[in-house]
Image (cartoon, rainbow, N blue to C red):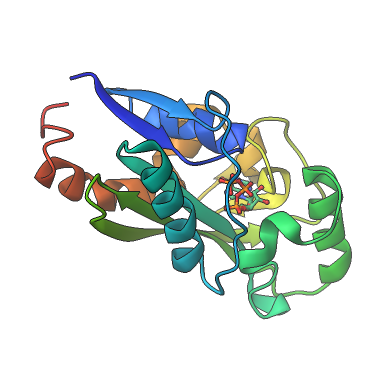
Length: 202
Ligand code: ITT
């Protein structure tokens, strides 16, 4: 099936992962279509995912998926959370180094990546699913795969030969198999099927 789908994201890391996770779609993203996206003014991941998806659907008329995601660190009261992309001005590296500074030597390093994934179908019907990936914040960054906060996030069950592995030390396939994005997408598949966009076999 060559179903068209628009991914309302300007983040190339997310776009790459979603393309890998949705191989049976003809996918376009904000890299292909210039679209001034609205500000993410919501207080929750769900609200921001819907703001992005509903806007793009209205303008383009295609089925749209948008994800709003981030890292919630328990010892920081859930920060950076919905503000993960805006935690501080600068690059992804500036943001994860800031996070490590904020956390300092705090013993409780538990954290989770969370993802709200909104799907809006022509006609305006929408659904939002949620995904989570639990783990810990490392004491220092390692790895050069993935994007965003991956170099400082160690997912649960990722200790190999006594050495913890950050998400940035995992291959795309390994990350996709356990990620918050995959968790949210898996919950979305029955809705995509209900709209006739994927068959159980695809
Ligand atoms: P779009 O809104 O255009 O999709 P964005 O990067 O602004 O792109 P968000 O508003 O959802 O996306 O912010 C997500 C933030 O959380 C951003 O800083 C990412 O780097 C980070 N993040 C989300 N998923 C991640 C993942 O799988 N690995 C590492 N960091 C992630």
